[in-house]
Length: 126
Length: 299
Image (cartoon, rainbow over all chains, first blue to last red; front, side, top):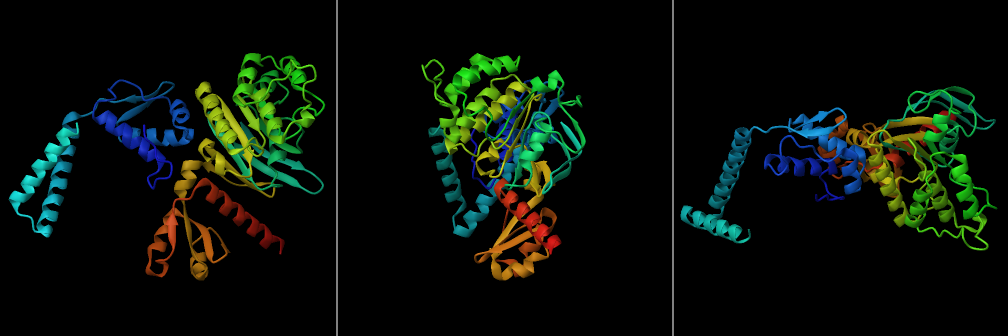
């Protein structure tokens, strides 16, 4: 896990964002437990309360559930809902790109071409 | 650990009344300037000396500090003269197992190695503790205290005489102590400089003039306040919105409650910076605020 110590983004939020990504992508599977609060604090060299706050954020979002004496259990995620959210994000980002393209005076064809180039480049990077 | 109305009276100094609850499973930092009463408070709850009045509940259940479970369960380490000056490493290795059932010699050796402390107990004339540097005295005391299997550590200024690298090691030891305890072990340590130990403090207690001025979990306190600073010319205007403020050099610095932070986005305050405070900034400003109130009430 990557933590920026001197970032504008609070450390607990950085932790929550990374776990959220891993849970939604299925990297951390439902039914498994997140690392123990104190174990993670030790590993990341941060305070216990900071990791706890990150886990509480995830619990509030319904991604995990605190189980007394056992830790934080990863819940089953509503895949359709997650996919829907991602689709909406893609639409919003593309809309931004279209707006910017108009301002820059790009034609529709040029924009599509640029998009295809970017897709190619990102595949090559994989 | 719960502390109720604890008072310790000296002819020239009174501690308290102190009401506190030290949360289990966390590291709590007791922060205050020299002379604020930190050592008096720690010595009182560690059973080093008696207190004038009040109640302390140790390890959640005990009301008597001389109970064997309390004596064994709490590891206390004073900031100086923990071991007699005339002692050597050899004395320490003999005395600790005799005094405490739960002292592990293996763990002590490991900690000495980790703390880069030479074990010269096998030498013909081991070095007297009198000749140890302040840092090494503290390392020895910490190694001896942490080599015991305890429920709670009470450490008086453990970081003060250590260099930054060692202080970082100490913070790591704190976290592993809490991790090994799985939420059932706690640490209470005092410091007058929290800067290097910010990442090891979960809960903080601010102390000034023998009284507790603020307590809370670090993340909550940092979320509760904003650190506001700017040109000293704006100090008068900003003052009414700030909980504590002081002016030095050409700038003012203060803390404002999060609900009021919006005020500083107004046009009058375009040159004022508003950000989340670090624990060190919180400490300095809260303690300065207490200093000012004390000066005002004395006047």
